[in-house]
Length: 270
Image: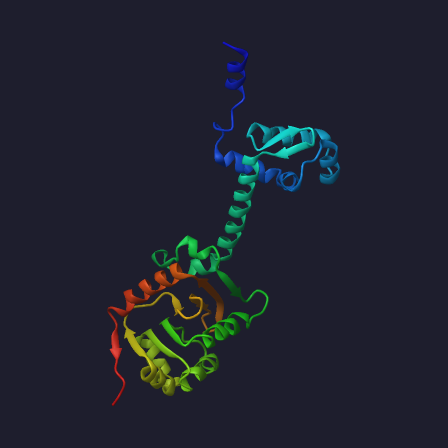
């Protein structure tokens, strides 16, 4: 057996390393990789800036060298072309992971067969009550005011908030195609009967006996985009998520049609 063959048999090459091991290694020494992404650096410089020993830098760099992510040059340690590409992918995955985790409260409220596609969640804009208890509703209200036509499953929040949203409908500034649960239709008839009339005059209102587990709104004239809200037990908007793009709209309209297909159209009185 040649010395080269013996070397390859004892030190695994980059190809033989699992991707998960590589990700864990980069995560462990991320600060070092960030520095090398910016420019080559020698061991003493890295040790000083990272506030670790030179032997620690050597060990970290050696791990990365085995993956062909880092190499030694006269200018110091430097990321290989593969290393730069992998680190850009790593940062992308980290950003997407954080973004996906931010959608956890939303996903927990939706049935699994109602979850938006992952690619849609990647750039979701989410506003919750962590910083401001009124922020989700105010953001949602501003978003609604920006559209001329709204499709979806509206939430029936507290009377005060319902009246605030109803101004556009009363002024005939917005048309709607909506599906509501029968209990919500009856509730709106008692609280804001003129709003029910405005919806029927300026669009289409459907009622269904099915439980609608998601409060969803499609505004095709806003970029386009989709809005999702969650409510507290007392009818306050606890979160508003905005999903943008054609794929989001396609997903939302398919979900809307699933409920509209079996719903009853409430005709406008003559």
